[in-house]
Length: 258
Length: 258
DNA sequence: CGCCCAGTTGACCAGCTTCAACGGGTGTGG
DNA sequence: CCACACCCGTTGAAGCTGGTCAACTGGGCG
Image 1: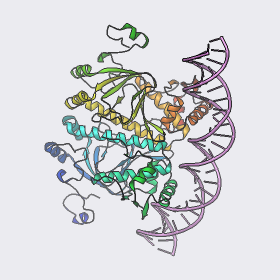
Image 2: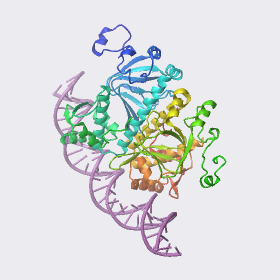
Image 3: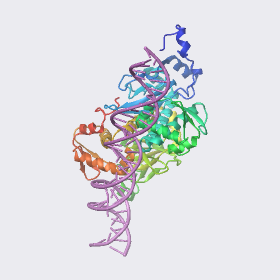
Image 4: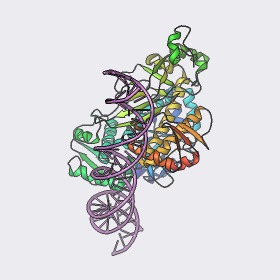
């Protein structure tokens, strides 16, 4: 994917390949690591950045590989997974648009990063990005904020993994995805809504610390009990979001305020 | 450690209360949020800080409470836990000396923080600390680094919670504690070593997503199999650290390099 | 058409939880 | 001083949740 510059009009037809997008028109401008940058900083980033695209299923990096860039997810979904020698896998992060990949100061990737759907990432070579972080405060500030948010999310996930039942886990996953894409559209999740599942049953299982069979069974059970309705395999209709939250075992406010 | 100023000999008798410690003599000086500060910044922090002590078992803050300070653990251990309405609990953080508590920019605590042992914390009122973060880069830089480390730790914990067996969980916990207090003493964990368990069986269970009975049984099993030896209930002798790592199911290098 | 992949469902089983009893150490009050 | 309670920890027995193994369906595609 991602052919070279101005040529090859055939390519952009099907995929609208954003070989270079102005930061000002970027869909994640207000949420990503660049959110707080002023115009000057943005220009600096503009000169540093380049886009990469990955097809669904492709690896972005493998754990242990050298990784010379950091990046923001622009569109699509990526997963962060850890694998044990015997093959047991656990997803440890779900990267949605505006989420950040890579750790400044570390050049070896700590996790497998995989494109779960077709994916566009806005990349920066590590070194220049680190220099920018050292000289301008806004990038570092925003990155701290985002990292703290991710830490909160990871901790909520720990509660799910350690203490929730399979049924609660499924309901929680649906609730989280619903909330995240409501917040992307600046809405509040409630009432009747549609959740577009970007993951296979196996990926959900990796996320939830379950097997794919259990995921399938519990989705069927939630459907039987009227908590959800399936529209195909990946589209899920939630008739009553509060009911879903009950099933998830969450406090109804759904986590950390502020 | 550091008697109180000049006065109140009665107070310092039983507990050696460090009512004020010079930053230069602080045991966590080189690892805490202040690690990178220069002398000037350190003086500023010196004027901001105050110590608080908590007895084992005491709450530091409850989730949902207003929290007007942030703090570093100086000595002792604190736990971060989340609780569901029906009482299920999951520990989401284990705070050892030099670890940071509280989130700049947020005034409501997101978790229950409890002293697992007698605890001394170096506290800063939130507002002045936030101002300091905004004006001097070193505190914010170090906090970002620490937060990224915590995120890595949380993700390793997710693998444990989601995919490891009870036996592996116990072995992992012992390995983590051994590594952490080896690194405090600037050693490398290996060969024969002693682990001082600062937690009750129930707290371990909360950490590992198990019941206290399962924890007890698996510790007994590891003892039977010669992986560990008990010296009392809380002291554990590990004859061969590599063997323990095998039991933990970890890669032998034990996690993220760099 | 046949193959592969994602998903569903069933039968059986293992690992962990639940419930319960018990032991040892410590603190307290008669 | 002992009796008692309480906490922490250990161990046993039984039950349930979720894992394992396997068969089957339906859709997409060479």
